[in-house]
Length: 155
Image 1: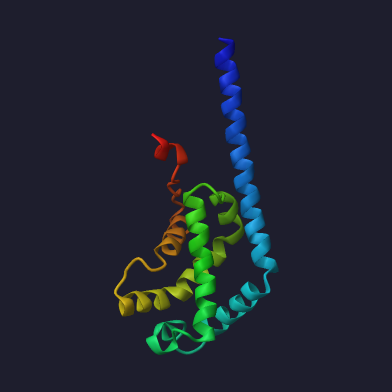
Image 2: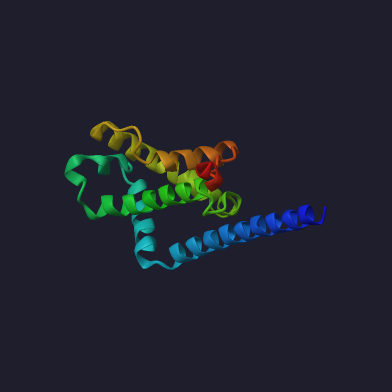
């Protein structure tokens, strides 16, 4: 009986530690983004471009691919992609991130969806920014993300 109790306590300790690390990673990512001058400038550019005539979709054209404006849009979208992958792999805490960024995720997806759909059409790939789309879906529908648990890969 004692070994069972010890095993349960050890498992609880590991799970608790993983949850704390996941929350710490989430807080650190948010803090890093809020302090990164490039991210802040890209965010300002993203918002500015999204309010102009034609929105962000015009920046998905091939002739604008190497522009500073498109680079700013991609920096913002790539961060959401990174967060979604981090959530799937248990590196970033979904509930913590959702509570902090809920409105931002919804607004940024709505503003960037025309850009993403135009880019997908132009390059012929429906998977571009699909992780961000999934993040939006989790937040917008209150679905829980399926995590890619490491021990599933071990066995």
